[in-house]
Length: 444
Image (cartoon, rainbow, N blue to C red):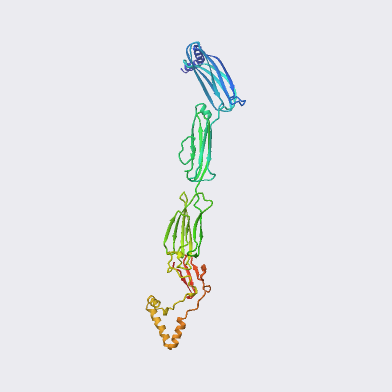
């Protein structure tokens, strides 16, 4: 049984050429002429296209097809022309094959009888060396913007794409894009990157057409975060008297990339706060004496903020009744810095109000001590007692220069009236009362 099957297969193979020859003999389609003409499309002296010329006739009404197969080392492409022939009709035609790459092209010609679905003629047309007539796929990405781009600044990526091979042979592919933070349509429109978050990006574009030709390209893009606002506070009039020139100005750094808005908070010596916005400087000429705490918050367009602060000291005016100060001043809120040598202390025991206050403030013990002291004085003779009282109590004590008194290493300042001031780290101020030989707190 196996032997019979083997014999049948051998006979079938041997009879195949006979069947094809019989079909060719029965077909009315015949090739009467064919040739290949190399051509130079760009006139550079190198052939870049092959034109296959043919003539086909038929003895009966027929449908015929002319097929030329072009083959290179990497690609095989078929080219077709279909014909309808009348009895005794001869038709001439040509097929152009533009080179898609620099290579050797081998051409095969086949004539088909479509009515019988058989190849009635086949011929090797030869091998030809060609330069490329069509440009292969090409992609490019170009960045447009400053060398250093910060968030929100204008920038774009221009895409270019071409594929003459795919377009000529109707085998276009699809361009794909990766590496962008937002979805982008797969076309060649510029990509707007002004809204991208800060970061490093590698934008890549890939393409492959239906013939297997491809290309790819990439571009590195860096979007920087805006630095925190940089500015400084310029102060004039610190440690100067009320009523003289004084200003605090916020000055933007010369390397800043955006405009800033400012919010000011000023706390005066009484602890009262004043808030001001959208100005670059403030006038402090009529601010009350004392330490003023100034806080400034600068904000850029990206809502990044930087805060700075400074203390400003204003001294009492020379004349608190100066009309140029307006009604802002209150001479009871700071010591009279202009009294100088005219200051005369009033002894405690000769001042009824002060004594009463001291007794009320110190209680019965102070009253008893006062009584004992006065009694001891009065036991002496009236003359001696009054003399001692005048010398010991009524006579003003000698004035002590502030230079002889320790300042606890605090910064000091002597105004034109001779009054010495010192400032504590927390901003509090004292003034030296030479008559009492003591530092007197300044209550602003």
